Amino acid sequence: MHIEPGLVGGTKIILSYATGAAALLYTAKLCLEAARTREPLSLLVRSLATTALVFSFFEILPHYPVGVSEVHLILGSALFLVFGAASAAVGLALGLLVQGLFFAPFDLPQYGMNVTTLLVPLFALSGLARRIIAPGTPYVDLSYRQGFALSAAYQGGIVAWVAFWAVYGQGITMSNVAAIASFGGAYLLVITVEPLLDLAVLAGAKALSGSHEGLGWRAAVARRLFQPG
Image 1 (spheres, one colour):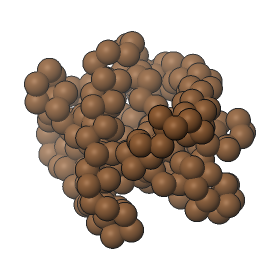
Image 2 (cartoon, one colour):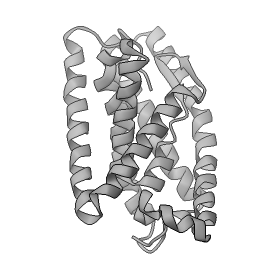
Image 3 (tube, one colour):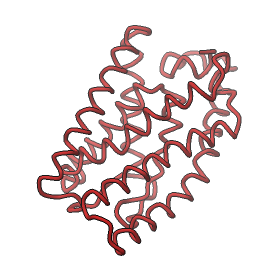
Image 4 (cartoon, one colour):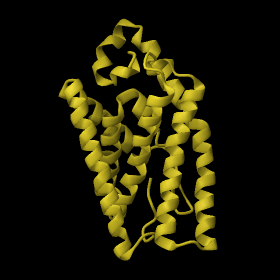
């Protein structure tokens, strides 16, 4: 997820520092809560896993510049379901930062915008999950409708934030609106594909959980993946 350099410039970019800092502070809060309810080592292992995965998603999976940003297959809802909100948030923030530091330094000035765009929809997704998934339902038993709702909420949140930054930075012009529309249209494909990938990941986790070999890695995934909430 990379907002085009120069889309928001001058003093306007200060807002992105504030929103990015707020998103990171909320991530820290989630981590503290997660550490209290489960061993801190589990949180660390899950966060390292999500960081590596997010970095791989950004660098290895196909990504194309479209309009005002880039279209990525981020799999944010899958990260949430498998590793939990705290670890997913850490992975998104650190994976983005590692990529910027070592592979795309031109994106670092936009880090506040990019991290806000990735994390705030994740927080909204977490709230939606509590509303549409019954407390007694492990995530491996989600239906396609639930998976689609979670994925659409996350990807829709990304599109909404990208649109906000574009309008905030460049105003409402025909060319800017057209660029936003092309980006949003491209993300429709992601919204179609990602729920299927989420359910495939959950099906794999469910199959592995029933085997003797699968029991050892349960500490490296979210407890809710296999247990009722």
